[in-house]
Length: 307
Image (cartoon, rainbow, N blue to C red; front, top):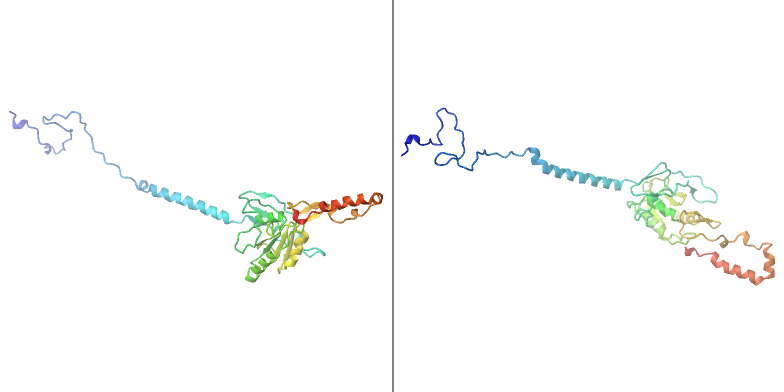
């Protein structure tokens, strides 16, 4: 029998010294340590810091801020003007026998996407422009005061021989009667003077523009007619005289005509009259001299609508 004094002390009692009993691991009934067990101390998981807890919301806010910033930049860039003006043109004294005034040529180079241009003189009757669908040339029509239209687009219409009629709201051309008058102007617009292009192909483009000296301005390539009152017939005459110009069978304007230039022989000229050298042949063979001229006439004088 085992004496009571030999029994192990209760694990719940502390030594008399007051020092806490150290854990010795799990033991069996005999007091020996259980095999296969190791002393382990329970670890308490560290609580996340404030930054760790807020990391996901902060990342989300950052992504949202980037998206908003990029969107604002894109919208601002799209709304920003694609052009600027160094100076505003001045109205010159009229030249007898002419309509409107000449404007120095500003070239006809094409712009790339995102490019901006500064025109030396506004409104520009030439210059850099877009060659992109929806940007230039513009669809010929009446553009309202709030419709998108810019010289980077309608200068391309000028390059093809179209007429552009500009009006200024700041100078009083945007009331209802004025807008109605612009519509009437478009309805009565004539065919082009050389190629016979019907309205709606390259012109007219009627658009708002503020950087000009008068209430209205009619433009063809390298030439401008300034008006304080819209005189439709005067604009039609201006277009007939300068919209498409040919001299001696060569195009003077516009830079990109929409038809071939008429042959110089199509128009009567001093060279068409019989010359001394031609007289003998004409008298010797009247029928022969008449036949070539009769055949040459139709081919030498193309109809305006042929282009």
